[in-house]
Length: 296
Image (cartoon, rainbow, N blue to C red; front, side, top):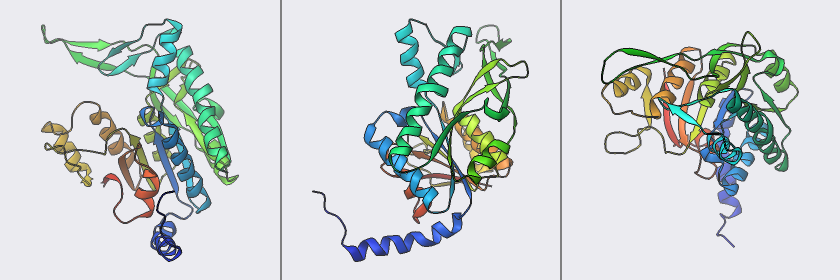
């Protein structure tokens, strides 16, 4: 049996968390739960416990989940080849059906089930429900290394949020339910779009004027050139670190999402490791936090 703190230590821990609970009372916190962070059953249980505790403590959590690895496994099982361009999955008509099936179907309900198992009242939704999120086709250009000519990338049915209607989320939160959102949305012509989960979470956080946006991923946060965690950054510092090559690869779009959310009115954004036990509670209810805090 693990060594547990005595009752007085437990009481002291709760007292130390009290000012943090008061700070976030009745505030919206958007949590992006990454596909890679979902792989461990014990970590999934910790995450569900954290979300339920937040709601019971007076916060209004909104969960947005990804599912890249799960989509990849289903595409392999169905024999559908997946192509990536510039780090984004090319989503053709066959792929977008699988994306919707996995994200808005099995995976969404699995997360709802985890939260329900810990005593929470969760409801699974996607961007299509109640016209919550309207998407538009993503356009990307890249420079051909040989000709140096800009070329437009055709990513198929990959979208980005154009509008967010918060009415559905306001109603769900008013009913003391925990919304669990899959990043699938409709376009103006009712076409289904696969939306990057970080981008989707940033748009939701901005529309809801969230107190915090937490991006749970599989790394500790933003790292410096010596691979050490940077605990706090401003928007200006983020842009400088992208420009000088300190922030690279997949971390660039995550940080750009953070900047977008901050500019939309979110108070602060945190990139943190979702594999750390109770990472959400450590970030919100302790003094030292658990990742990289980015603020205006």
